[in-house]
Length: 294
Image (cartoon, rainbow, N blue to C red):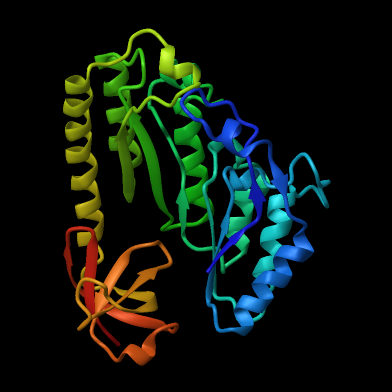
């Protein structure tokens, strides 16, 4: 199930229209959110994803720190304690919201899924500054290292914008280099698209569509090769899968996700839906793993 914990956004990324369309941040109270999750768990929900535009900045202007913990970590602890809940995820975060207390939470809260979505957007410090992202590529790489140290085996996925206004070949090569260094488990890569009334829409140096597309295809080749390699390394392993029921593409198979957000297709009775199942992986193909329940 998905649980909205906040609305709006106070950031001013130059390519994004959300602050104008959804207004400033407004966060729900922790007891209200916990009550909703308790109700879902009572209905048999095993996994909850907390939703917010910049989810890890939840309540930072509205609620106080407690014992040195930011409101978002307080919320994670409270939801983590809900009986019957097996997994806890959140999306979509911002790199600047990963403070020390949140990183540390991944080392001590086992229900937190071993996966974080960490939007990079660009590997070029010059472009990141133009985007008003608030971090450098070096700070981003350091954050990934600290997260992986806190939770060994952590899967990291990302968002990347290709062809942001002013992006040069060198800027693109920096993005490519970061992808090769970090080795994302998945990457959502898009050509820059103008959004009306955003600063980037009228910025100089708009990149030609053909140039954007060439860079996009090159980066997809890089990232897809890494993803394929990471999935292939799981062949022969046993993984815990939350079964979601029959696959939409092939009802003869069941589908589900691992804690690291890998899609797994496997044989079995559809009565396994909603259960945590140990699956022996026997092959990997595309962006999926295939196997049999143990």
